[in-house]
Length: 379
View 1 (cartoon, one colour):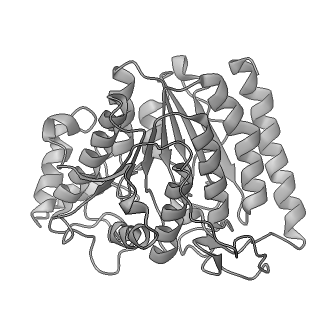
View 2: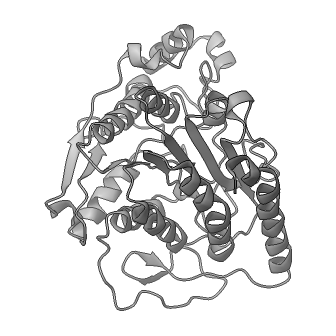
C-alpha cells in the first residue's frame, strides 16, 4: 500500500439474527459474506484496517429527519405489531414488510453510517465503510424501496452542519429519491446520482432536468442511464460529468454509495456493468485523496455484491491483490458472475444494433449537462 489510509469497517456483530423475512430481496447477510472475502484476501489483517461496531442511532438523532409519529409506528412494527394506519406510511408493504427487529436493524444502519461520518470528520479515519448503509429511498414519514430510515440524509446533514462540504455520490442502480427530496435545496451537499433511467426502473424519477431548487440549483445532479449500459459508457458519463463537477465543488468529504445492483445479472435491474467499472471509479476517487464514507446500498445477487464490494474497497485503499489472470476478455453473453481471476469479473461489452442507440443516449445526457449544468459551475 503506497499510502496507508486508516480504514474503519463497520459490521453488525451481535445483530446477525436481525434480517428481512425469508424470500425478501434485501439480505443484510451480504455483510458477513463480505467479511469472509476480505479475511480470505488478507485485507482484515492489514495494520491500517480496523473492524468496528456501532450502536443503533438513538431516537433524538432519528428525529432530526424523521417525524415522531412515523418513528413511533416503526418501533411498533419492530415489535411485530401491525395496524392499518401503518400502510399509509409504507410500513407493511411488500417492499417494506413488518418483522421482528425491524426498528433495531434500521437504527443500526443509521448508527453505523453516522459513526463512520463522525470518525472521518474528527480525522480518526480516512475511509469508513458501512455495508448495511445507504437507505436512500426513505422519507421523513414514509418507508419505500426496502428503506425505513434514511442514513444518507442524516449523515450528510450532520457533516454539513459541521461546516464540511459534502459530495454525495450515489451509484446505486435505483435513483435515491428520498435523498434528493431532502437535499434538493441545500448547496452544502453536491448530490450526484448515476442510476438506471426512471423510464424503465423504480422509483420512476431521477431525470436529468431536476437540477435543484432555490439555493440548491445546480447541486442536484441526475445521470439516468439507459438499459444495457456497459462499463465503457458508464465510465464516459462518470469522467465527462461527475469528475469535473466534483473537482470544481472541491468537497471536504465524499459519501460514496456503491450499490452493486448495477452489475449485469442483478435480478432487479437492467444495466450490464461488471465490477471492473466500479473498481475504476473507486480508483479515481482514491486519487482525490478525500475522506470517504462508503455505504453498501443495493445489490440483489448476494455473492456478486459481496465480491464487488470487496474489490472496490480494496481498490479504494490501494490494496487489491495482484492476479496474473486479471484482464481476460469475456463474450457478450457472460454474466457478471463469470470470473477473470482474483475478484474481478470478465470484461463485458455491449454489442449489436442496440449499441448505437446506447451511445447516442449517453451522448445526449452528457451534452445536456454540459449545456445546462456546467455553466452554473463556471465550466
